[in-house]
Amino acid sequence: MGSETVAVEHFVDAFLANNWEGLRLQLADEVAFRALLPPRVSEVDDADAAIALMSSWFDNDEKVTQIETTDTEPMSVKQRASYRFRTHVESSGKSYRVDNTPF
Image (cartoon, rainbow, N blue to C red; front, side, top):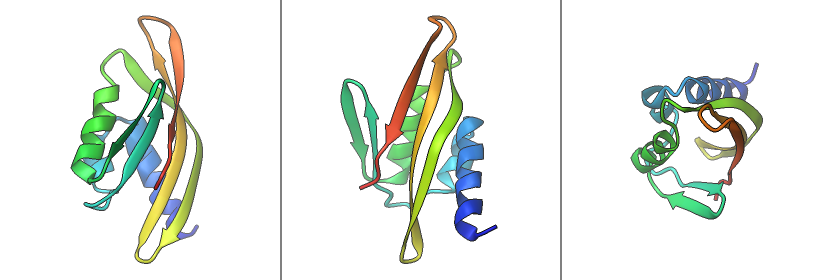
């Protein structure tokens, strides 16, 4: 198993568990993060803001239920990851798909 696969697995495991501290450890301080959340695109340019944004999406009623795709691209000593995931809101019974687009 390559180091890229291991890095993605750690990211996905932390994300699915809503483990924001563990997820923060996976991000470079100057991470650029963009997410398409209809009807808007949200963009931040540091890891703490990315974690704050991601954790604000989920409360006790909404959970990530599935990571649909994860792609990685090496960048010098860093790695770019993109992913798509589904969430479910228990109170409304609705599910949503969220796309992360690296830039």
